[in-house]
Image (cartoon, rainbow over all chains, first blue to last red):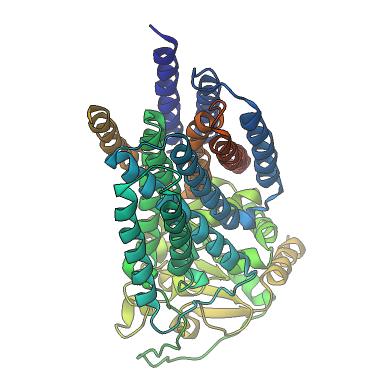
Length: 462
Length: 95
């Protein structure tokens, strides 16, 4: 058996560790071990590649390895948990860039491609470039740097996008006829440039609130780009790993779309939340504000409390305060659970990470579908910084833009306490009838301050 | 052409496997799943190393390959370490 066969066996083992790593992620008990196993497999694949007979020069590899690793480690330890969507967004883009560069390097090194080889180069360059520029726009929108998070629309938008797509296809045909560098270099160059423009055009019309979906889809694209570059270098490992990442991103995209009750097409055509929406339902009832001491009495008497956190909780940095309140209530004999809507954070699972960071046990975090059937037995449902995801109009008002969206049915709890800065509306710009219900009390003010006040009440009362 | 068919075969199986395995990941862990996916999409480093390791006469290709190694390694190191950092926070507390 030759060296190459041996190295290919290492690749198979690496693929197994990747799959095992994802499999172990099915439980928080084993997930960390899975990640480490997967990382070992990655290390083995990198070492094996060093030994390949084609690899005769090391200086560029070493430079890339050292600088890339240093930047990666900086990202990994410097990024706050609230910044995870931005970091994942950037990494999606870098994955796309790496594949784009591999396509270009192979194009330069092997001028005589078959039709199929040319087509794969073309495809890899496009996916890589779209992933890169799209991710950069998504990152800028999340950071609200350089461009605003609002959807950017202009007349003729779709025609411009269509023209760019046609250009990429037409030049692709010319490129396929002659794939040899240097004559074909301008073709691939313009194709790459158009694909970079396409990535920007696809993401700018999408609003900041929809960025989680975009990040998921770009996550998928970065996998597909790795997969496509696997066809260029004819390497199984790249294809297996890329395909799994591609599948993962698609699954998450669909989950997020379902949670927002939107179709993928509806998200990507963009513009959602840019206009003022009118709801058909008359809001009845009146707002009943309470102070912290009244809210404390309700919580103190409760056997079962469900907390519905929204991103407002993270914005006011109140995760630790909510944990303190949870501990105080548990000491008082109350069962406390967190009901987490899929779009509670800025990306899938984001709220779970933010709560875990504040030392909240993961078995206290329950999914929407698990908590809803138990809602009638909940004494107090406390909503902190969430709005649209608890809006009963989604189930009761056919004219509401939220109609059909899956919600946490907090209105079915015996008492609802809503912590809110003011009477502002949610992302969708829709009035929330929950706030006017008979069983709802509003605790106005900064979430962190309100929580702190409740904790103090518990301390004083004990 | 035979290689191509074989690679496509691998692709199709991997897609099915991917949907199967990923759909079992609870929503609790979706953020680490995404950062872990970032790390794994850094597997492009293998293709990048082969390009960057090409011999004399391919200088430009090798340099592009080296840049690709850099970007892919950001994903590998950034992805695995941040995922570990997050997963380390998911704890079950005794009551």
